[in-house]
Image 1 (tube, rainbow, N blue to C red):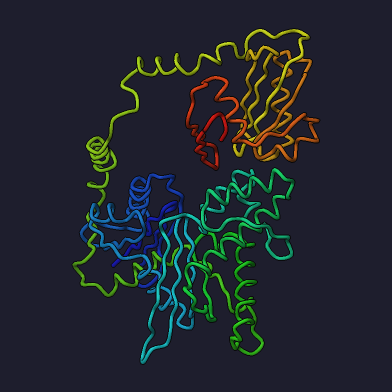
Image 2 (image 1 turned 120 degrees about the vertical axis):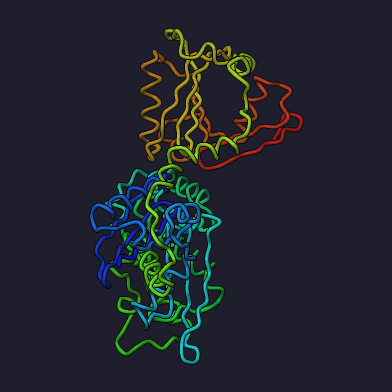
Length: 455
């Protein structure tokens, strides 16, 4: 009989199929938020490639996205920490601490000898992506680091900087600030690895000591060399500080391991638990109901739960634009020859913006470019746009945003302005009776309350 284990995670789907105790099929792919579609693809392929048959074989599911999908194909749902623990106990009976880092959650399991068996303490964080794979990957994308390069980037021997470990958005903001101040990307990534391990040890150990042997599971722990190095550095230091007796001649390299199948332990645990279930549990029912859900059911459900739009139609939107976009009507129009103009630039976390004004405060040009992760390249792109618009003489230049401190001297700017002050000054110029400003940026949000023209 074939038994299938499927781990439907927040960013990927992992699956293994075992027949007669041997793995006959396995795969791991990103689902790009289409969990049901990717599971349908996997099951269809297993039917064609390893003989998975409705009514004869069995399927067991785990993961954050499995609760909805499992009943549609006859599968049984297994809690993911239970699944991971089952595979670890089967494959690594000597392991005493496990860290599994997923796309948007992280789990730790402590195994302690107890009587004739082992007791387990489990801690899990799933409410925030801080300290997870997404935490690293989002920031790496912002820094324009390819996946292959990210996987090889080291932790050992690299200078570290403070990066928030509690929140992915805070971490991205810290990384932006470091980048704009000229810190090399290698040091920023090493600091991210530091933040991930710190967050796991600070949040998910609850004061307990992770004892050797230690097993690292999940995609981030498997793929990122620097993250493995950070784990070994931190755990080695922790064992020295707490006088943990290590096996003779063994160090963190031998005592902190990452198995080749680190991606599949939850799926393998599903199979292990499934073997102990009654033979009529988890009988595979085929993909018909799952296909119905993908093509029709999920859309009907969304239609029931949907809310009203912010605008009732095109008329509402046109009215909003007339009220609040009047100031931009002259932008990107005719140039003013050799008339000296004033330029203001905002070098933000994800974009760079510039405006060109006449001495009479008429807006004659506006530029907006995606940040390349390098403030100097962002500045070049902005000023190419401004030059192409015909601007030749600049009477004054002011900067704001993350990149202002690095670029002020490079560009010869007259002044660097704090963002909140810049917001208030421009808002009151256009709307003198404004009381509150809300700015939603790439990695931060600001609410500014104005009193008598000050923030």
